[in-house]
Length: 290
Image (tube, rainbow, N blue to C red):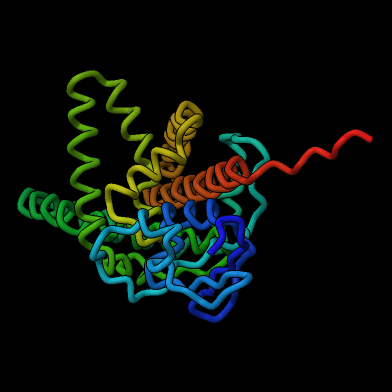
């Protein structure tokens, strides 16, 4: 197939996405949106498996892992418009608008998460630490799926927080590696630890909606946050007064404020995806002067 040919990606529901050039397909492979078993149709040829295309073969591991599952869908438009620029309080304000109709389900989700990793006595506390270490990554994947669903306009339910165990191994390894490297960065100097934490801030949403392994998800998070880490740090700082305000409402409000913080991060994640996607798009040709 010619490198200048146009291609269409055939999703599991039969819908076709395109046209796209080879470079766009390669980017989608790196993002986990195309796997080896994805069907791709060329403009002048039959349907091929992505893993059988010479133009993409180098991006897939040899004798790769199972690719039976369909590629994750391209994110739809968010339920509220994204800010045109990275504005901290706009993300938080729009997050509050999204949380208000679903405050009970989202608040209960974060209450259950807190109960899973803590307890009223020291025995339960240490047991909670073990539970957090083992299943914390999978729980985070489930929570991120629920929150990204809210951003897309879908109704959440508490059970969604337990729907991340299909990515248990990658979520566990990401949880472990991110924690160890961030703590090492904090021990050496505080600033490197903070930078690493922000660099890998979106590792779990990447795992939640792509087929990328834990290390590739960490790299994708680093790519998304590049150029925006200082502003993400300011967003994280803004969560402090939001959380304190929630704590004033009989302490129960802290779980609602946690939901607001997470939804704000989900909006920032979608914002960065759009910015990076726009930056990667080829520029329109400049018309020749007459």
